[in-house]
Image (cartoon, rainbow, N blue to C red):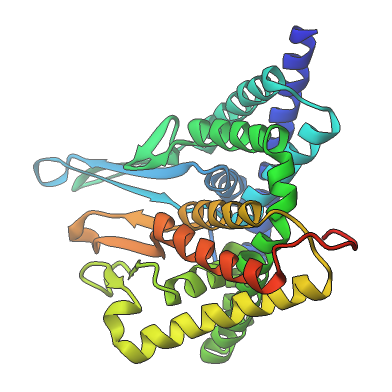
Length: 351
């Protein structure tokens, strides 16, 4: 029975990575259709899938020009549509098949094996030879580790599948009790703010392609913006435009912005609490707070975008907020929402 559970888990893990690859190809096709990339879909699709599975991408350039040159660039940051789809498949099949820890371990093995195939397919090497010398470019998804706190594609796929499977199995009741607060506090306002930002990008650039790409690649960018307004420190920097990423904090921007950010988060939390009260939602207060804080921290960490290029090529690109601080801000918002909703269980439909 244990071997059967592991085998079933392996198939589930492979399916999760397959879903990520299919979505990666679809997003790559869309970006090509919008004219935002000239990279072949056969390469961009696996690259996006690997990033969505919490992996990374690396490019290494070697040359014998001028006595020999070599540098490396890496990038990380998950397109959350891909991450969410893979996580939803894993969570749904875990509950449907009543998968235990052995099944979850099997899913990790399957996801790791499938991710290894994706990494192998994603590799590309280009060579240029002329009178000055030879330049060779090798690029593709990273295998085990990318850099810093960013795992490689295989490690990221295993972590995503195993953690989601364990949470869907052992932590299902706590998540079910707190998901309404988490979705109302983090996901829904994040989506709405992102749509407004996409509309603003279309207006500023007169290009619908930019707005569509923003919404597809960063669907919860608004969540990061809201949590940053609430006090979570962030970073923003763009290669060749900013010498180094700027530290962003509403607290350091003056009392007006700080108080305005707190007021915005307070208004969202109170509105969520009122909606839950009207819908007669019931559930433990602690479940709502912990689910919201965990979701906010995970989303912020996964979505933080980093492109680490050598200083001579423009330096670091980074966009994101501190995950731990984001979790604390989200926990405070969830606590306020729960207080407005009321902590007493009342009869009625559960969200």
